[in-house]
Image 1: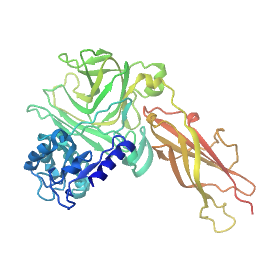
Image 2 (image 1 turned 180 degrees about the vertical axis):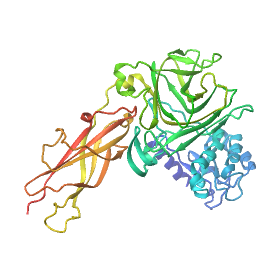
Image 3 (image 1 turned 90 degrees about the horizontal axis):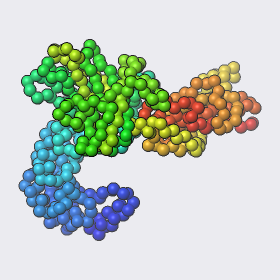
Image 4 (image 1 turned 45 degrees about the vertical axis):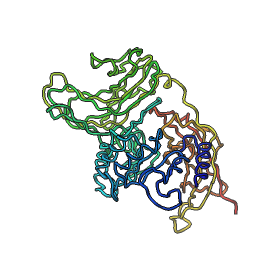
Length: 500
């Protein structure tokens, strides 16, 4: 077995860069099924033959102490198993899983969390989001933060599901939907309480009740006590070398009566060589936290991106845009702050819904968007639709078309693609001819360069006539501006019934 394990590890590294082979603590070197709950002389041979070791869950601190001598310099390659269901003799599980993580980190090992689905499976479904946030917040200080390392950074806080689907404030589809590929980057969740006795606090929560784009938004509730001017929530960690000019955008709305001011803030690293322009320092004692300057007169060339800035949008949403000029800096954290209105001395309560945040390189906004190319269809299938007419006096029976649409486009430039069709009965040339008077009908969203169309209803042409249906591929740029319909990709299908 060790020989095979070494072979498997070598082959995986060649075929899947970054792939890891981990050995689970179940079989010992003699071939017996015998859980050890630690790395020891009985299973060390497997650890030496692959990338890491995943221990069983019934360990105590004494097991961790013994393992330090076995692991040597490879302590991070030992993944100590934690059963969130807390089955057996375990240190901690459920809402006490943090006790296990604390011991694991104390001894310098990695952790392998098993079955975090306990939150959904064993607790009230209606409280899932609150319980999910509670569970991970308890573990937060023991887990590494994954930073954003490239621009553009765009998120609408969509969780890949919703009670309805919204596209930039406009309702697109009614009814529950689920699409894991539609999930966007989620923030650093948690509840933050201010120091002192003032009772100030801020809490973030994913919410399906409303959305700017997708199916959910980020709800932020809080209280600003009288002795505090503002509170800020750290939403994202960034580790991005900053281009000379950066534009930021935030879509939000305040719910209920509130006069608090909402603004984006950011931190910068390498302050010694960081030249800052076009941003306002918030704290005179530090040069690392800043408030971006609002973009009041945007460049003409950026009109497609900033067209909504400063405007009241549908559904009560507001978009604010900012410009930041930096040189030699590293972007750090992205925060949203809430400050009391001037002259206010009372406690301020607020409820704010964030719909979207963007951090984009100004240069990339000026670059032309690639074209959708190489559109083709495959796996085409026709079948007659069931006729609703009971006699020959009714309309001709329609057809059902199924096919797979393929195209070429760099996925890094888009959030997704919107697929449309223009069904019709009139014949016409294939390719990029002008569209007919029909308004394109939205079929759905694609997150890769293909889309399967199933049982699309199209008209059946009459004798001696031809039919035509045109498919359109609309790229949706990550920056959120609309691509003119003339620049969408197109593919047309002409068809006719066989002669009898």
